[in-house]
Amino acid sequence: MSPRLHLPWLATTSVMLATIIQVLDTTIANVALPHMQGHLGAGSDQITWVLTSYIVATAIMTLPVGYLAKRYGRREVMLTAVVGFTLTSMLCGQAGSLEEMVFWRILQGVFGAPLAPLSQSIMLDSYPREKHASAMSLWGMGVMLGPILGPTLGGWLTDAYSWRWVFYINVPLGIISFVGIWLTIAPSPRERQRMDFGGFLLLALAVACLQLLLDRGEHVDWFEALEIQIYCLLALLAMYLFTVHSVGNRNSFLSPALFRDRNFVTGTLFTFLLGIVLLATMALMPPFLQQWQGYPVMTAGMVLMPRGIGTMAGMLAAPRLLRYVDARAVILAGMSLLCVSLWQMSGFTLEVGTRDLIITGLLQGLGLGLVVVPTTTLAYATLDPQLRNEGAGLYSLARNLGNSIGVAIVMSVLTRKLWINQQELSERLQPDPALLALLPDTSTLTAVPGMLIGEVQRQAAEIAFANDFLLLLWINLLAMPLVLLLREARH
Image 1 (tube, rainbow, N blue to C red):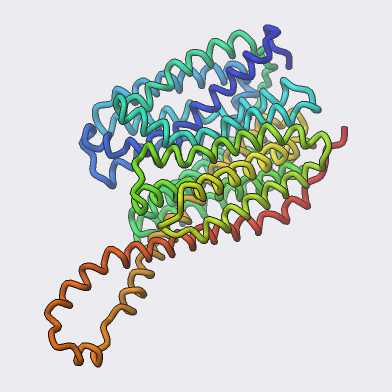
Image 2: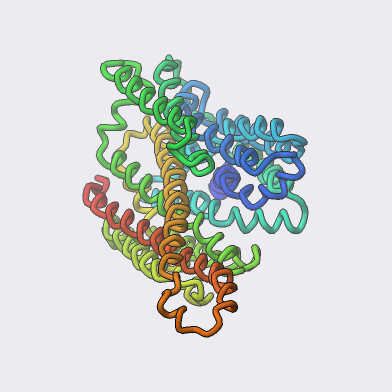
């Protein structure tokens, strides 16, 4: 595909902006939730629907991206998505009630879903095969830096202006992206193809129920709640019916050829596991820094910034390394850096210094950057170009599901371990009756338990965070053998 104007830098910048604003909105609103709660008249359990509605809508509408691009043209779908996302972002900023906000967030997720996968397929088609690594490096920066910079940018906009600006910021960026795409991206061929609506509805139901289970579980005590049990049963039933429906169906919603490409299947599974580590770590660090170490919001954001710098450095270095080194070796080197950083983080205490936080953040970011670029390049290396739109949608869905599952796992483990650790530590602090009998006056000891509660909570949190980081280390180690299933592209 050749651009309408000979301005490849403008085409790249335009689709990158579309990716960034979509991914950014997954996390930018998190820090603004307490401010929204008062203005929208919502309870603490209700305000989380601002995040859940967007995530679920995005997950569902990522599924038909390939079909929509074939049926209506990739450029047209991309332009429509940018316009819709920009308008709904503005309407989210103007929302006056929770119901209104959730409605616009759902539409924002619907329009935002095609942006990341279509921008990826556009960049793959816009560059020759030998430059795919460089293209995926640029694309990966948007996907990776969005979640990393989101909380920092959201906190600054909320403090300096208003929570409404976490949505308004998308408007100028969306306009620039639209103009750039309209000027530089050529229309793509259209194909009249029937859509497997039955398969889409079943898979959409399975994905929606899984996302709701993951996002709501922590708030309603997981499988103790009937709501979560229903989500689980519906997800399993819908997935089973989708599998039965697809077997032998010539017009299957997902092309069987996708699952016959070993590199694509392996790369998709690998990015799913990497997604668990990526966002889970970012979910753990803000409460670790703010709640337990007492960092202000902006200071915590600055301490986490080196992770983004390391990610950029890794992504810039990866294409150059791939010219001389086997891509699988680069992936393993990046995974090794991730293991080292997670091992160091599993030894963090609540007295850990800023220097150690910065070093581990840089190492982790560098490792992520070295992993994402070659993994994405190899995942599409052997895939038929005709399947790229559909494959990009499935690839993005796998990454997003990994992010959701990772956050759900670590926050659930953190909550559970925090409670267990507090109980175990409290039991060990019971005074010895024989020792008390030797003391002449025990009246002053009544204040001791109250004085120790704070320290017990701190120590329990320290152990709980260490357990979470160790769990992520094991997930990272278990993912490493998948690299051996990838193969280099045949030029």
